[in-house]
Length: 211
Ligand SMILES: N[C@@H](CCC(=O)N[C@@H](CS)C(=O)NCC(=O)O)C(=O)O
Image (cartoon, rainbow, N blue to C red; front, side, top):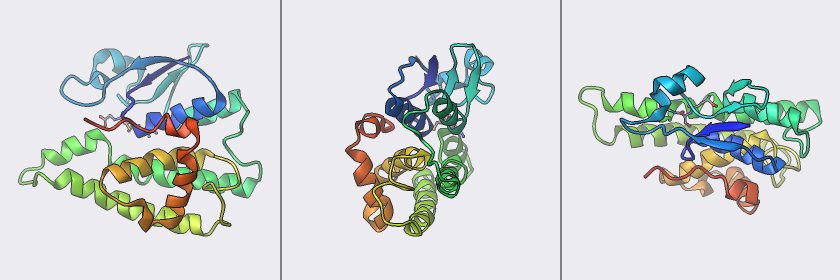
């Protein structure tokens, strides 16, 4: 399999963590997403993924899968151990809902294409991108912390094993710290991230810092 990726991407980090948890190796195809020479907007990559986004996974059968959560679920179905979704239907739905609350409602406000557009708004201050990012991460993780607090206290976001909820939460929390937000303000998020930091599949696959 081939993974089209830029290691600064938190959406890529989700797929990388899932691959590492399952012990599956892929060939990496680097696709830079930042700057004027970003390959993600090149005609060659747009022919692969018309959205011009990473990650994208090319299966050994030649099927191109876009969207990190679709890729994670594909990997979970193809390589069932360890399961990335709890067996219990309600827990399974909760894990998906935490993952989607981040992947659909926080992350889409934060990627480079949004920052680029914000920076071109006439009269925008130079701090607009940092302020914008901090605001949406702050609001989003506050809600996630409240959702996690409804769960019985445990090591992980939902249930007693890492799930898709942890896979999506981890990169987002790392980026929150890099944006200058202390995780301690969200006690349940902080506790889950402390547990995940010592799992090699998570620790080795955090999104790389943007230089
Ligand atoms: N919903 C997509 C989001 C993908 C996405 O936004 N990827 C970012 C990196 S985290 C990207 O490729 N950004 C390029 C850009 O914003 O121009 C997924 O989960 O895969």
